[in-house]
Each structure stands twice: as structure tokens, then as C-alpha cells.
Length: 211
Image 1 (cartoon, rainbow, N blue to C red):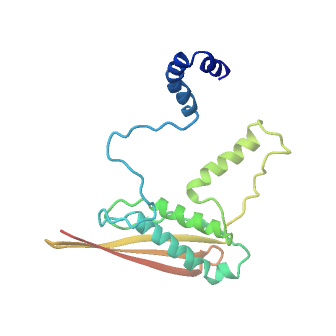
Image 2 (image 1 turned 90 degrees about the vertical axis):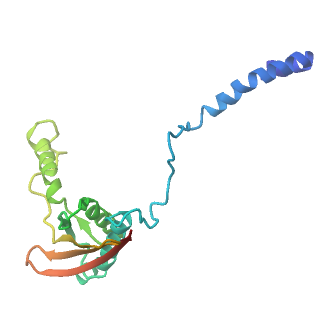
Image 3 (image 1 turned 45 degrees about the vertical axis):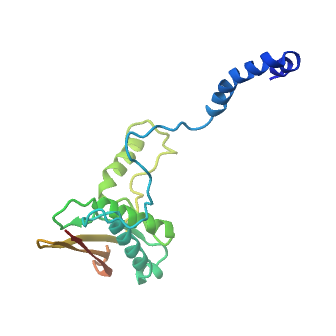
């Protein structure tokens, strides 16, 4: 920058040309610190993930969000949770009884995440994650790779007080002009020791497409 200032003072005409020539290089150097923008190959844009989704009348993001929020709010008001001291829960994958593919794991993941954020409950690993849990304990205790004073001991896992089980079913009706789908999501909270159903709730959704 000092050399450019010097040239401006001694040779104003040539310095101006030099400054214009160097300007793109200076600007490109400044721009390199910013995140690059990748050109889009089509009409791609970000939308509101919370917006009501009505692309089709199949199960969608709005339905998943509504189910998770309704079940979480209801469960947090139930007696086992209100009177409990952060009870330990586990959750089973929701059974899909509909005729369409539904990622039921996403439903249980959303419910579990919202319950954990509330701070009112704790979660033990579910059956899908148990293999990973036991393999981790085996590696720490049987491979000789870990200090015995630092490895987590076998036989210290906590049993869940309650488990959540649910299912989603649907009734589909079609005519020449209409396609109507009724969904019902049911969720139960079961006492693992007594086998008593302590809480249950349902969420109903109806979606109609007019052709």
C-alpha cells in the first residue's frame, strides 16, 4: 500500500492505471475470507421447516411435528412424570400399521428429543442401541485397551422405570374426485415393573386431496 501511495504522489496518471489494475486482485483477496457461493443447477431454495406442508396428502413433516409436540406436551402433564423424580424411560420404535412407508424412527427420535429438552425425564438406551452399548462395555473391560480404573464397569446399567410404545394406523378412502386419509397415532407409557399402563394418548390427522 505504501508503494501505491508513492506512485500516486510522483506519477499520478500511471499510478491511477496501476491502481485500477490491482483493484480486482485486492478485492479477490478480501473476498477469499468469505464462504463461497455455489451456483445452483436448478430452482432450489430454502423454505421454512415449520411451515405447513401440503405437497401431497401422504404423511409429511407437519404431521410428524404435530404428533411429537402433542405427545410430548400430554406426557409431561401425566402423573408419572409430574410426581416422579426425573424417571428413567426407554422408547420402542413405533409400529407402522399404515399402507405407506413412514419413517417411524423419526417420530420417536423427535418425541425423545423434546422430552429430554424439558429436563423432566431421562432415557435409557432402547433395544436398537443396546448392541452398541454392550459392545462398548465389552471393549472397555475385555480387550485390555483401557485402564481398569478408568473403564466403565459391567453390571452398572440402570433399568428403565417406564417404556413408551406406540403405533400409527390409517384409513384410506378414494373416490373419483377425492383421496381422503385418516391417521391415528397412539402412544402408551407402561410401568416396566408392574406392567401397568400409566398413561395413553392419541393424535388424529385427516388429509384430503381434491383432484
